[in-house]
Length: 80
Length: 220
Image 1 (cartoon, each protein chain N blue to C red):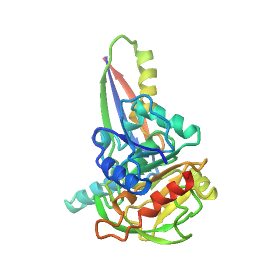
Image 2 (image 1 turned 45 degrees about the horizontal axis):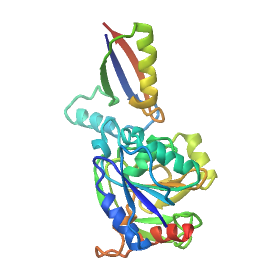
Image 3 (image 1 turned 180 degrees about the vertical axis):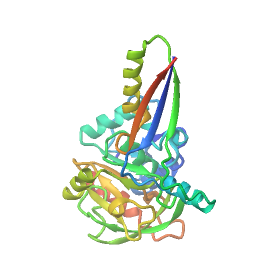
Image 4 (image 1 turned 90 degrees about the vertical axis):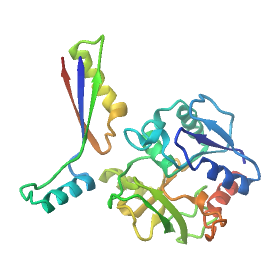
């Protein structure tokens, strides 16, 4: 079983990297881009847990280590 | 004054901190490796600058979960002094011993230069040798020094007078020009600038000396 964790900055937190990406895309002619948010993806391989427990435990991992909840939000996707 | 410097894999200002502490206190600090789970009683623990664990995940994230941090937290809970400098500040926010977080610099560049700071509080164990509102020159060297806290947290921080140092010309986008803060109890300080690099031996004015002399004065 695999857990895919998406971590992104919370709305309202200034994202200078996202702004830089937006600016670069504009300079390349991709004017339809109005905003960009840069986050990270962490894939975890799991064993010995069912889906429900996996969801719960990976959320705990996010709160305790993988995300800094002062500025970041996370979502967890469990896949087989 | 008995002191200790915590050494993480990737710390690179641990020896500078030890040199500054030895210069001011006349005694060498204990150098404590991050895997230690206990340490002898000291008056001051310094979390030094550098790139602990290669800044993996987020600056300070891994170091904040390393074994020695429990001993550092116990020391702080008992009222012991803790100074986190640069990466050490990041470790303190990641471990929730200080509020907020140090984000990527607003200009996205690594900044390495001497900056002017204003001493916002001259009545703390970390700043009592400075004059109130003094301007001092201390170098910064960081990529992630952009202090951020949620609005209510920032308001609490300001309301309780926990900001000790502010940038005169904000280099990194920190909210309210914050360069260094205290915890609520007043015994844990984090700051991005490096006082240990301003000891008057590198053609600088030596404005970092008073930081360490303040601590010596506070402890006795």
